[in-house]
View 1 (tube, rainbow, N blue to C red):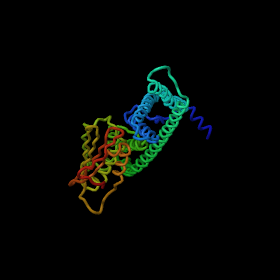
View 2: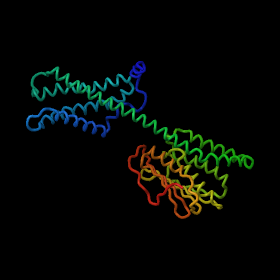
View 3: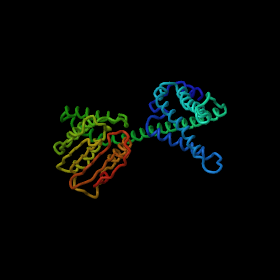
View 4: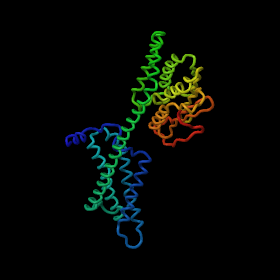
Length: 367
């Protein structure tokens, strides 16, 4: 345990999620300013007061602490990349030095400016320097501990998210497996060339399933996989299935998780076209508009009955995967309108959206 700890301190930090956050961001700077001001306010309120509240003391203490906080944050911001490539012990020592050194410097300068009026030589009080240095040491230790715990929480959250995505993706696999194998088996004697192509298409689909669930691919790759899946189903359904693509407005390089559209197409075939003797049509429309990807699948469906509700797992899993990757702004809705069923998928191109999901008209659950 001890040897492992010292080994960790001697090695450069392993991983991109460095324990020290990016202090260059406006949010981090604002947070530090607010926290520093709260600490100053608590310290001033804890001082014994004779008469009215000493606003001058509050102003001078705020000025003293804010200068230290801003200069330390700027220095750590500039040194973050350098520290990330150095041993962890050295990075921690630099963090202490960057905070304590300005504290001691401003202690001496503050005494010279405020109490000596810029007159005479610089003078320092050993007890005052020790007191301010210990305060800076304790506050830096608390902040570093907080940053470390925050980093560990983020790591655990990411690990749980990857496990959740893997579980959701693995549940999608049976959706296309059995029908595809049956189609291939029926084609082996009738048309070996089509059977070979179907095996290749199926292998591509399984290769996509084995990919990392939190890795984004592209719309071009997703469409290629879906076209392969539709070829397999076309062998089985023949002229009963008619597919229409209208996706010119959706560039191939747009980020998209693999196997996002394919389960919707399988839903359309399984619950829409397959129960009808004359089959039906599947319309796939896609576009990129105002930073959002929108995919709409419209398919012919049989007359609605009360005895068959179909499987809701596909749409529920896709919705959960999208929200895990893109946040609550990702949407997947489905509704029926006459003899057609609509599935509408919307998500932001950005990796980390924060806007809340908006409900849509005619929204209903999966069949």
